[in-house]
Each structure stands twice: as C-alpha cells, then as structure tokens.
Length: 310
Image 1 (cartoon, rainbow, N blue to C red):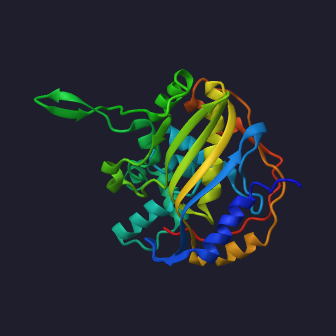
Image 2 (cartoon, rainbow, N blue to C red):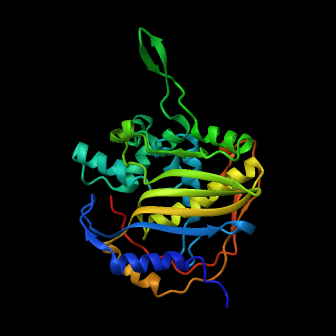
Image 3 (tube, rainbow, N blue to C red):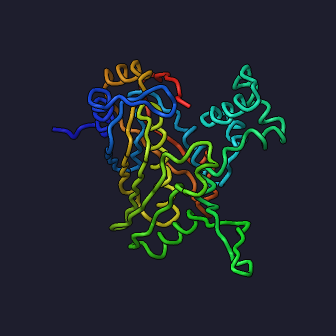
C-alpha cells in the first residue's frame, strides 16, 4: 500500500479546522474558525518541495518575497516593481485612513510608489518587519556615561546562522526570529512566521518553522514553500543535503468568508510530486536571484480565488 500524498496532511488540517474549530472574532473583523497547535512534516530529499497541487500556487511570488526579506528591505517598492502585491494592502489601508482618500485604488497607489521617491518613502514603508529583524536586528554600543547608542548596522541573524551551520553544526542555537518585542508597535504587521530553527544530522539539514498565526486558506502555501526554499539555500551554502521541513502552527485558522475555498479544495485529490531545483550556487546566502530557482513536475489544479483579510 503506497504512502498517503504529503498534501493530505494539509487537507486533513483544513477539514479539522473547518469542522472542529472554534468560531472566533479576530483582529480583521472577518471572523475565523480556529484550532490551536498543529504540526505538518515534509521530506525535502530528491528536490521534493511542498507545493500544493489541489490549487495553483504562484511560487515565484513567495520566492521573490523570501529574497526580498533577505535584503533587509522593508519598503514595498521593490516588490511592486516585480508585480508582487501581497504586502500592498497594509500601507494602502494606512494611506486611506490617514489621508481620507478612500477612493485611492491599488493600481494607482502602486504606480505612485514606483514613480515617486518621496511618496514611496512616506507611504510604502512597512516598519521594521521580517527582513529588518533578520539581517539588521538593533544592536547598541557604549556611548559613554553609561549611555548606549544604536549602531548603524545591527545584528545579521542570517549571517550568524550560516556561520553556525558551517562551523558548529551540532549547536542547539541554530535559529533566527523576527519577534522583536520592542519594535512590534512600529510594524505594519507583526511577524506571523516568526521563528526558524535548524538541525544538522548525518549530513542533512532540516528546518523547523514556528508560525504563531496561520491563514490556512491563503498564507500556508506560501509559508511552507518559502521555508523549503530557505532550507535548500542554506543547505546549498553550507554543504548539506536537504532533510525535512517541520511546520508548527499556533493559532491555525480559516476565515469565515473562505467557505467556497474550503469546499472546493477538499473536493479535489492531490496528485503529482513537484520538485525544486537550484540552478546556481552564488557566493553567499544573500546573492540568490529569482532566476536561480526552477520548479518542475508541477501540474496543479486550477487556482481558487479568495479575499485577503487586512
């Protein structure tokens, strides 16, 4: 008897959340059905990658976002220049509420972000979100008389992780996090995929993601693909084979206005074995480009549209 398709774990979790989850009022006002605590595991050997096959996942968007995180950039301008819109709703909502210009549509807003430096600087920044914490965590140096001043360049957690993986692979401190309590108030959205930990065993690199909050209908597919991509990049840089991806969710939920998505996706059967190939090994973890990644053997079923809760 053959093993269940890896995607069945995700479909089973969706079914459980939708049928057993507690209905809750949430920050967005949309409402969710939610369970607390879930684990999904994926084998990444032989180029395997956790891309959903029961609906099409725009994996290049997730990949471009991950590469953007690694630059430390926190302004949506570089994303919208690449036609990546997944972060636009937050600054657009902030712009509308602040200026009273409720008629501003997304296309016009993004066009101004691209064309106008001052507008982009004022309205396109998300605050110290993911990438800022990953590669520029605030660091302080003595400034005399028991005072400390913030250094221009903070702590690069990713660079430290790569060094640890290469030189101390048995360490239990091979991790990074975006949950900087002091800077949460300045973020457009506090980190959902917040802490990543890594483990080397028998020449294989595995990674564990703890996600405090997960939108199963829309966010999960991007989160697990991006994490698998990151594990592959780190393994490539540090001389390991890819091992396993372990995803841990805290508040795991489905939005109440995603009923059509749940019903349609659960009616589908997963099939196929998508693969991810890295085409080039750059000099560092920070030098990968979108052209360095190739997904193959991916024949998903049709996309299922659903609204994003802001």
